[in-house]
Image 1 (tube, rainbow, N blue to C red):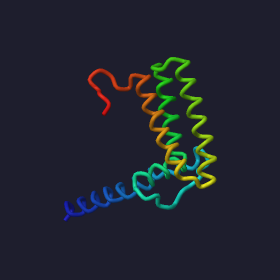
Image 2 (cartoon, rainbow, N blue to C red):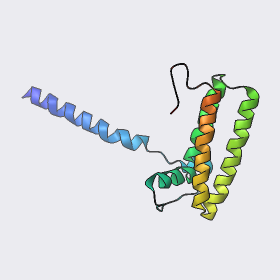
Image 3 (tube, helix red, strand yellow):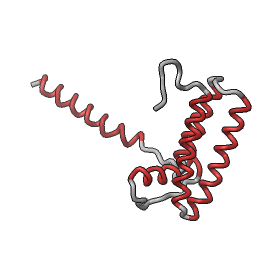
Length: 135
């Protein structure tokens, strides 16, 4: 009887942990760049995701975070970091303008430029060390 109660109690604790975990990790990306929102569909699901992540500010936040980590690790030269930062600032300004106006084709292009900047950071900071090859 006590073994069954222990098993039931353990199952309840495990169930509560599984239910609380995802709720605690939910995050609203609009706090990072104001969030200019996009709730529609853009045809191809990949394009829709790219536009949503760009207009929510998530893409800009992630690229900025990657740049900050590379600077803290000392893996970027100062002038390269400044050039990348100017590029990110320019993209964030364009993101705010285009997403507010609802020009989602331009927002998709901005998302693609964020990906290009992320790759630039990875290349300059030697993110892909020996044995790693970009595909």
